[in-house]
Length: 147
Image 1 (cartoon, rainbow, N blue to C red):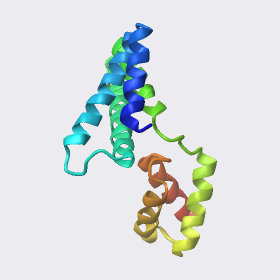
Image 2: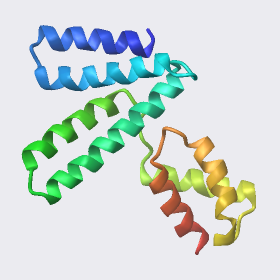
Image 3: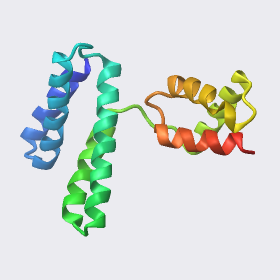
């Protein structure tokens, strides 16, 4: 079952359960899939995962803005939708797992100082795509190379 079929099945389930909040988020996901189908790169699992990550991150950032503006009701909706997007993403690595992987990558690339951060980030973003947030990877690499 590909990602489009999974989303369609979830939409049917949400409709039958009359779960309008989940249905709205799933329809947002279907919209992303339809945009990918018409894009030059087409619909692939990896393209869908990247798009879902981007959408989840966007919703979390929007929720932060709403919280700053003391609009908790709108923030809750955004956070709920981000959670639905994350259900379809691969499990994110814990900080410990991320640290272990980055230490391996640092030793493989022979990096020893913050000047080598570009080499490490290039390898890390390829190896950890979809498993960890790029910002978190960057912060952790910086911390490990300044030791």
